[in-house]
Image (tube, rainbow, N blue to C red; front, side, top):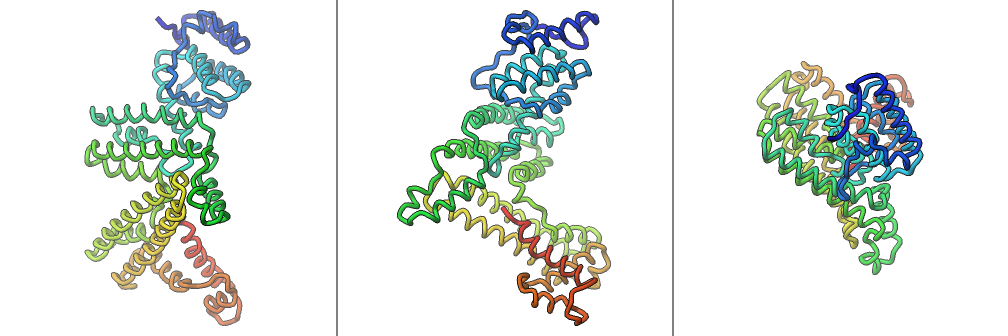
Length: 412
C-alpha cells in the first residue's frame, strides 16, 4: 500500500519527521533515493507518457491547483529550490513530482491529473507557434459540457488527450521553433534573394525546423479533428457554442469581433424591425463564411514552409485576400445599415447614434491619403482657418483610428 503523508498524518512529531525527511531528500537526493519514505511514494512514468517540464514559475499554479496548506507550501518552496538548481528537463520534473507526491493527501493526489493538465495548457499557449496549436480541446469541451457527460464525448476527450500527450512530448524533445512567423518571414526573404531557378528546391523549410513545424501541424490537425468530432457528439444546444469558442481560442485573429455587426445587433434589439433583423442574420452568415475562409488561409500559411516552391507566396496571397474581405465586410455592412434605416430612425437609439457617427467619419476618411498633410487639413478644416484645432483635432484622430486602426485590426 502506498503511503500518503499530509495534514491527516497522526501527531505533530510525525509531520515534523516527514518534513525533515523531505528536506533531507532535497539536500541529499542521491542518498535519499533509497529512503523508504521517498520510495513509498514513487510513481512510475512510462517512456511515452507526457510529463510537462516543471519550472519555478509554475509553483503558484501547483499550489493553487493542489490546494496546498501552509506547511505543504513551505515544503514546496524547498523542493522548488532543488528544482532550480538543475537544468529544466523531463527527468528533473519527474523527480520533483515524485517528491511532491510524498506530502499530498489522497484527495490532493486525485487533483494531480488536473494540475498537470493546467501545466499542459500553459505550455500549449506559451510554446504555440502556429494557428490552431494553442488550444487544449479537451479542456474547452469539459468547460462547455458543464458536467454533462456521455460515453461518446468521454471517449473522444480521453483519446484526444492520449494522442496530444505523445505529440507534445515529441514537440518538447525537438529543437524549439522560436517563432513560426519569424521563420516564415526569413524564409520569404531567402526566397526573394535566390535566383528563380533555385526557389523551388531551396524554398522549403530547413531540415532543422521542418520536423518541429511538422509536429506543430500534427497538433493543429489533432485539435481541428477533435473539435469536429466533439461538435458532432455534443448535445445540439451546446455544440455550436463549443465549436465557435474552440476555434476562436485556436485562431483568435480570425475571430476578432465585428464592431459594426455588434452595433447592428444592439440596434436590432432596441428596434427589431424586419429589415434590420434580416440584415443582422445575413451579416452573421457572411462573417461566419469569412472566418471559415480565414482559418483555412491561416492553416495553409503556417504549413507552407514544409512544401517549398510557391506555397508560401500562394498562402500569403490568400491571407491578404481574407484581410481585405474583413475590411470590405465592415464597409458593406455600415452602408447597408444606413440604407436600410433612415437617420431619424437610427438616431432614436444610442447604438444607432454611435453608428451614424461612425458612418460620418467613414465618409470623411474614405480613400484619404493620410501621408498628405495638406489634403488632411483641407478635408477636416471645418471653419476654414487653415488649422486643425478643437473638435476638428478630435475628429481627425477618430477618423485615423477608425481607418488605419481598422486595417491593422484584421491582420491574420
